[in-house]
Length: 610
Ligand code: F6R
Image (cartoon, rainbow, N blue to C red):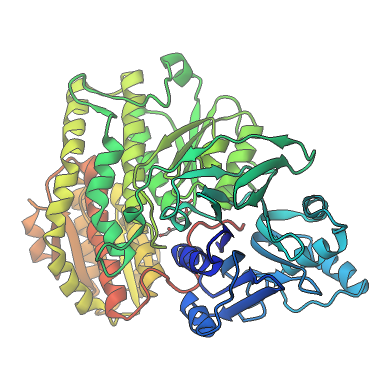
């Protein structure tokens, strides 16, 4: 949700600002802007549209200077337009600011400031920050920033540039991420690691309530409330620069789909102990007594991560026999869940920054629950807030549509369920062994699926002009159907609904007419016949049915119109294979419909607003 960058050093600021923003476009891409101090004044350039529009606009008169800030926007307050784009400035162009988040009390502040004669150029919440800074400034930049922070409420990552202080940028944050990349005679600020990874692997991760004064030759840290100076540990980034590039793939999404075998291998690494028939999760170190303290588990997440949670419920209840409830984070925190010291709350988040999930986690910590985060980003806000963390090892996920993060989340929830089951001895050793061996072989099976990509492309070309689609399945297949339908919706803009196959007949079957696309998942053997009956129900209404089934289930060919086979595995692992053709299906549908796969309309990655 909005990408922000800053540069100070001996080089020109603009190249880093534009490159950094291009790496952060997944966080928002409805408009962009930069502000550079050119030795005389702060030059601001902004444009509605993608970063390319800004690139075109500044061609031939690129702002020159060694210090600057930039922003790529996902509109919250005020429509996407040139004036609403960041950076925002005060009345006299003395200060420029970029912001990610929401200033909740901006209306009252705006009214006050206008009454005192300030002129507002935009409809944004952010502009009040620039005008407040103008009022609070009495010669000391840092003191003025701290005074502004006392006046604003809400969530923010902010970077400030002041004409009178061309040797420093000031940045601060609350509930939105900020990272500072350490260079040689230059320093970089960004909302996320991909923006700085080409320039530095050494970084500082800012915490809430901290402020940094960033100069070309060093960074100083202060507590925003007390003003007390402190030292911060350097954080070494372990992602490679190439991991944040497309490497020859047409889209990040396609690249990330193909990275799943490696992401899964990396996530399993060191955690599968086949010799001793157990799962190793050193992150937890729980004893049986610790487990007995958990009377129930909540899994809390949003979007795709929530879908991973639904699979997690199934795994934990089946294998470890602990009751699990799965909640959407934005609902959970406001529904007064019954949580106490006997509750384990697991939050799942790729980015580790999702506002709803983070807020739910904070609330659960306050209520005395044990909290565990499953996240992909080391040192993210969620990783730091949770009492325990298990990392997925997916590497950077840039495409807005989540793919490898989801499959690695499934791996972790399964490892967790097996770990709990091992401790509680609710699983037979032979069953454990079978699952562990199949888990080890999973990456190879995903590679086998890629060999059938052409089939998916043909199916996408067959279905591409449809406006609606249904995804059905029972049990684990239903959880995966939800993810398949979300993938299709978000990148191809086809209305898609996922239904528990047995539930269709309770109303929604009315929507099945001749030619309606139905993607039916039938991988779970214990309810196979029931699912087939449900498929027959939609076939009887002449739906155009694609079934995704295990390789040995050839009899399905007599029932449906199209079949896609997944390699043989245990039923519990089928979701991790089934979702791959669904991801590819959504991808090729989007490509066939001419959609912008990596930057779908209205969306952005890392949703840091409520
Ligand atoms: C969909 C997608 C979103 C995210 C959701 C949570 O493809 O990416 O639904 O899964 O916004 O994000 P994280 O996992 O970062 O908390």
